[in-house]
Length: 134
Image (tube, rainbow, N blue to C red; front, side, top):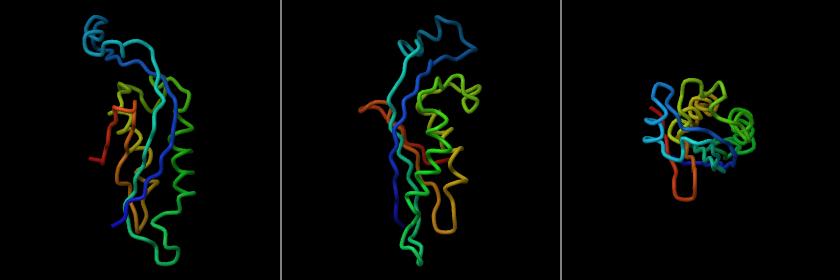
């Protein structure tokens, strides 16, 4: 089994807020992240599989890049995440961002010889989330 990873960058802003809670409760839980702010995120998408006998690729990285750009990056780069339909009713924490991105990519990064293995999102140099599906 081989693991192939594509790394991309995007910038986005958000507010961490649970709409069912009061302002003081939100401030207590989310602290300064309850204020409008943004991040320069790095996204790593990893697929797992075996090389195709004809091409030697697990997946052509040009195709993988196109899928990630069209289905994720173009939707979130330089956007306010709280206003996007893909985050409707979801607090856009890094954890939830990873789960949403998985949903956007899982079916598109699946073929006979490979499938989506993980989504890794770096919110900062020191903080990141890894999601490997349900």
